[in-house]
Amino acid sequence: MPDALSLLDQALEVGRKELGFLLDGDVEEAGRLARDRGQLTAEAMAGGGGANLDQALEKLTQLQGLQGQITQEARRLHAALKKDLLRARRENKRFTAYKEGSGAAPMKFNRFLSRQG
Picture (cartoon, rainbow, N blue to C red):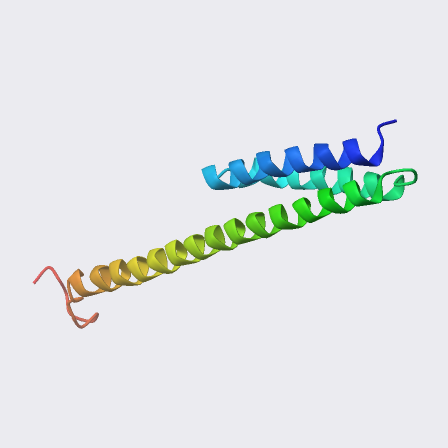
């Protein structure tokens, strides 16, 4: 079984890959890697006996900084998605208004009058 430091190293590497996928816009793969990173970190914390505390603290500090970058990128993607959805909503309203405005007005006729003359 790997020791806590190697698990934290793996978590750092997975976190860097996750950030790369987020930068590319692949949120599905980034989500899968986030779960893997969380599992690696939990395993490192559960079996952390015998690890050099200074090295473990350094790795955890690096993970914390990486988490901040990942969170910042995720927020940026969220804001971009929200902006796109609002734009699409406004366009949909505009197109609906064009559709309603361009339609011919229905002819009013008396249903009791014969069309044949």
